[in-house]
Length: 61
Ligand SMILES: [Zn+2]
Image (tube, rainbow, N blue to C red; front, top):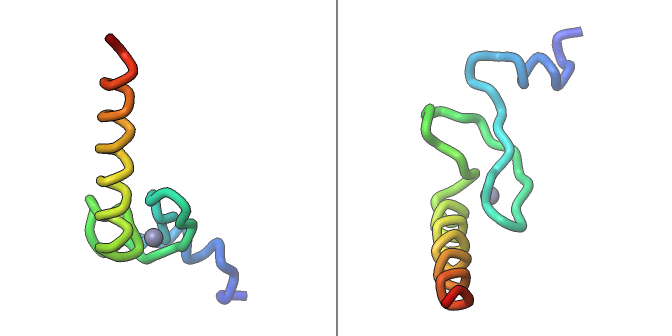
């Protein structure tokens, strides 16, 4: 059976899980550095990272 989803995961254009917070969609990685299902998620992930760092630097004296 070629329709098994595992065949997609193991293929060269592997499916990746979106790494943006609150998003768990899968996408086909057509670029080695791509980590999100769409540019909007990439923007959200970068923003979350920035706010986390900012909050931590505010808490520490
Ligand atoms: Zn996403």
